[in-house]
Length: 220
Image (cartoon, rainbow, N blue to C red; front, side, top):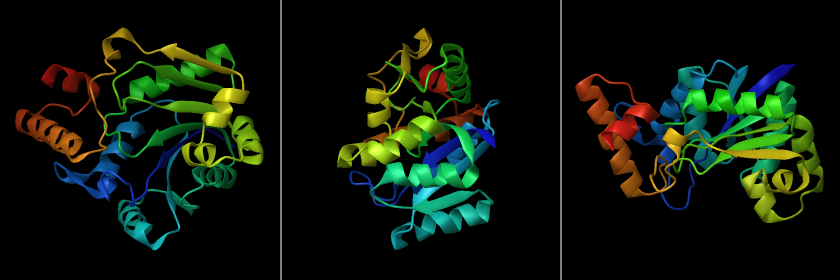
C-alpha cells in the first residue's frame, strides 16, 4: 500500500490559458517544473500525474512517457472520479492533491502539511492565506471514497474536495508567516501570470539561483 500518493492533476483544455501545462519555463514545461518541485518532498511515497482520456491530452501522456513519469488517464470533467480511480489503482492510503499550474509548490510546505495532518489525526488538512498558488491538500482514501460515492453536484465532482471539507473531520491552519501573502500570485492562470513566472525562471538561470518560493519572494 502507498502511504502518501501525490496526484498532480493536469489537462490541456484549461479555459483561461489553454495548454498552459505544456508552456515553456526556461527550457522545461510547466508540468515538468511542478513535478520537479514536488519530487523534493521527503514524505511522499509516490507521485503520479492524473490527466484525461481525451485526445487533447495525448500530448501530456506522450511528454510523460518521454520523461518516464507515471500517469493515469480518466474522466475529463469528473475529476473526483479521476482521483478516486487513480487512488484505487495505486492502492493509496492517503492522497496529496496538487494542481499542475503551481510551479513553486514548495516541498517543505507539503511535508509540513502532512505532518499537520498526522498530528491532528483528521481526514483532511490544508493551509490557508498563503501565496496564491502555494496550495496543497492532504486527505485519506476513506474520505475520498465517501465523496466519490455521495457527492452528486458538478462543482464537487470538478473540484474534488468540497464534499470532503464539508462532511469529514478536517483541520485547516494558517500557513507559515513568511508565506502569508495571498495577494501575491505564484500560479499560472493567465498570460500575465505566465510572463511573470517565465521572467522569474530566466532570472534564476541568469543568476545561478534555485527557482523556489523563497527566492521568488526575494525577487518579487
